[in-house]
Image (cartoon, rainbow, N blue to C red; front, side, top):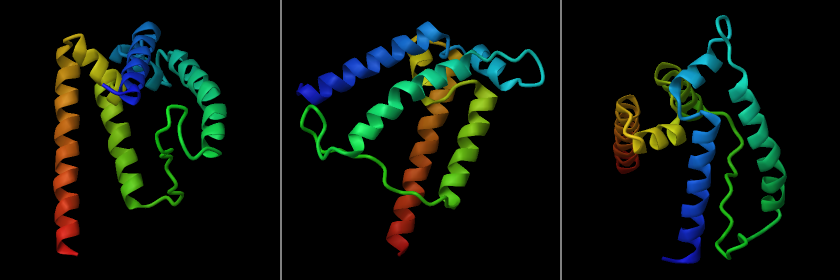
Length: 143
């Protein structure tokens, strides 16, 4: 295993523990955040704010670099326009998040904890990714 793979594994492990510690792998916690007219739970907003406070300065520094600290090429998104795929993807993400109470990271963490709802979510997410991949390949082949 190379140093980039080890770094990715450790980062994922820290992220998983953070999700578990903050309760964000618990769909009731997430659905409580989305219930703005009921028993609203603002704790997810605090977690998101903390993530932005940590990530923003680091992404600002990353934009100035050509390679990562470990020497890998820096790969930051550069697309700026709002288009149909972005809007449809955002809509699908939001609807799935609201219905299941999971987004991808917490869904995978909860799947690792053998939660049935998370397993269904993760399998559905993977199926959706596969369908997208198949449709994109067909679109490229047709062009």
